Amino acid sequence: MAAVKLSYFAWVRERIGKTEETIVVPEDVRDVGQLIDWLSGRGEEYAYAFENAKTIRAALDRKHVKHDAPLGDAREIAFFPPMTGG
Amino acid sequence: MSARIDVRIQREDFDVAAEIAALTKGRGDVGAVVTFTGLCRDESGALSALELEHYPGMAEEEIARVAQAAAQRWPILGAVAIHRFGKLAPGENIVLVATTSPHRAAAFEAAAFIMDFLKTRAPFWKKEHRRDGGVGDWVDAKEADDAALRRWGA
Image (cartoon, rainbow over all chains, first blue to last red; front, side, top):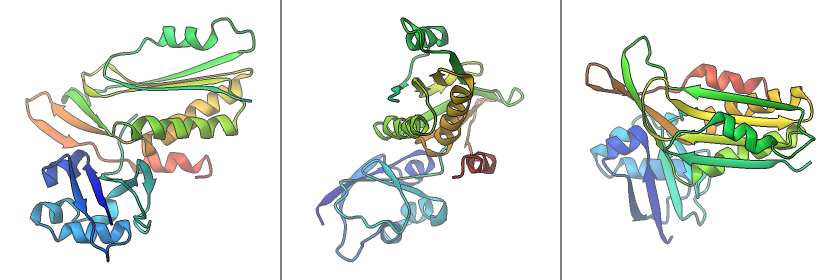
């Protein structure tokens, strides 16, 4: 898979300590949930951000998706908490 | 019916009267304008500000998708949604939704629908700044906001 841009928002961003980064997703990571699991293994800041994985929301190319969504050829993947606008 | 939809994400304030004028000027087919304005609360004096973070690009696109869905469901003539970001003091405007239609029911319902979905789908997050000087917590999403969607069959 080609390099993808990951973006983080709100407390997910604060816990990971980055706004965005570019990564190469391993071949065997095929959907959003697997990507969360893989990221969680990259360090304690990621494990902290994703400790309650079910609450984490994701977007592929700026559209909301569920955790079973295949990554496909998404160029931009975002992770964030439930939204509190309005 | 093709509704004119206008979505803006901005740091600066908005002028409700000017937005109404823009929706209605020069047209004779608008019989109803409904506006909703959401303001920053101080939570019984505890907060000095709310800081709104957003996902640029997706915020505009997601609110536009919600407004388009409203336009497919009700015969509205126009919809404007403006959401601010940055640090906002109690009493300041956060969000405006305005809808127009020939008759009031469509404008009322479409405005409520857009607000309900905007709250749970538009990528914005609020962080509290406390009057005692501390930076407080991120505001938690409310179950009541998810429950509000059920009346629309979501």
